[in-house]
Length: 516
Image 1 (cartoon, one colour):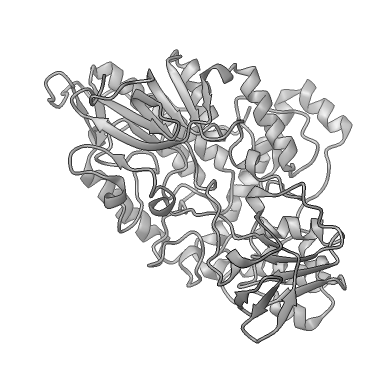
Image 2: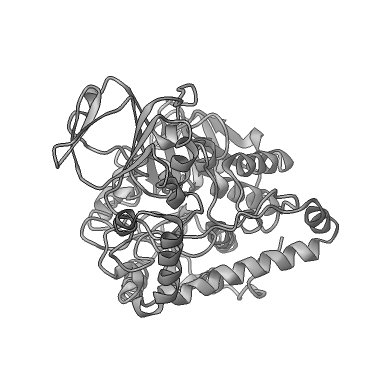
């Protein structure tokens, strides 16, 4: 019994989420010799974002050979940017290869987490009524799993079909239907061109145009796949080239004056693919390139040349039983409304039904009231032995998030290793360390394209950017190679005193590796 609660399962490490982050954490824990783990997954299959986003045209905007684990490569990717089905199959294959299913508890949505300082354990409650107790908790649920539904007057009274892109209804036949797509972000830019040939009419409701650059749609030849399988060093070289090519894009994002070249490429891409000058003007962004997420597509702009596709830039006034009315008074009859409105990414909102209580006086919703922040997106002061993957300010605008996940998993393992070495019960980040780190981080964001004046999902309502990592991924990798023990307090549970063991020796680190 912990906290006087009947316990369903007790483990060393509980991982929340069976997406790419949670699975990576589990694999590396097993390699570390820590098999006493459990993965709590609210769905009924692994995959997270790639399990849920099955809309037509869904694909990754990071190259296939770099959107995979460095330690579990795939030599036979079919194309440069894989579709969701191939990525999901990769995730399923990884799960089987590493024997992870025996650790996963499907249908277990975590709805509370409470730390017992006396026992040095976390108690996790689930919507199914189970309680899991663990020394360490790894939050690997990620920021892209709670669909964002717009508040539009009358939407609840619409008598046609309504669904979110992340909850695509494949049983609903769009052929011959009058379809409204609300939103022009990363999902809509993929599914709209895929459904346009089927729909009788497609109305694309745009609030703000996106910067769109060309996409490399080449497929890998059979010969190339055979070479990568036979000569792994060639695949590693290809992967390394992709890494440094992506990383070089950061230079153009650090200051608005440096993005004119990619902006010119995007404008030329638009003008070469859309015939109507008025449409070109409506699809041209007025904000700095990179301030919002830059999208990659060869199909988005040509879609607007179709006679059955309409770009609607007027705001939506209301939804009626069978139509949408815009602010200019135009009423458009529709049979189906698709919400391409993205996800709730602010953890203060999507975690509102998931209370996290740490040391006395620490409730995460209250501590993050003015903005979510962490230390390298992993540790939060006041929440011992709680580790996040893809936490605040670790998302990227230019490279692969899996690279960041692997660095974070490495860091979490080093924290666990140091805790064991010291014989401590829990480790807690010093508040002054968190404060200074985030002051530097927010200062680094000033002057970049991400603070160039536009409003994006990178920001909370007051404009503070809680999402983007403002430096290179190489810098992040180097910074997470070892744990600075002086940044933490290591506390022994027995007498609740601070452990005074010697600061650990540095763990030797090699150069950043993009091999696999």
